[in-house]
Length: 79
Image 1 (cartoon, rainbow, N blue to C red):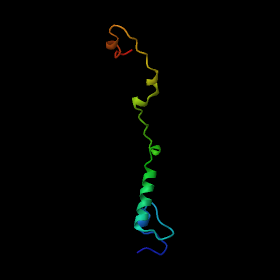
Image 2 (cartoon, rainbow, N blue to C red; image 1 turned 90 degrees about the horizontal axis):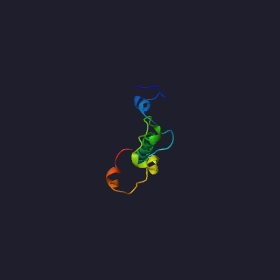
Image 3 (tube, helix red, strand yellow; image 1 turned 45 degrees about the vertical axis):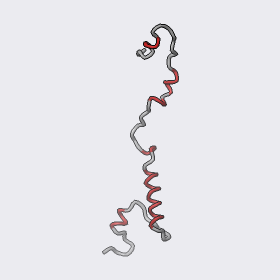
């Protein structure tokens, strides 16, 4: 048994606690979802973001295509 004013094991393990008011189960569930979503924002991860080639600004500066005999074939060759 715990002494008055001392936290129970469940209270020590909890991520947050309600200190005032009498929230319903639905209100506590909504608060839990909001806090979990805030904790899982992409800005909080330490892994570097992977850039895809579609949004790479370098693709806007591609070499222009020059028409001529066989140009369709050589347009995919590496430069």
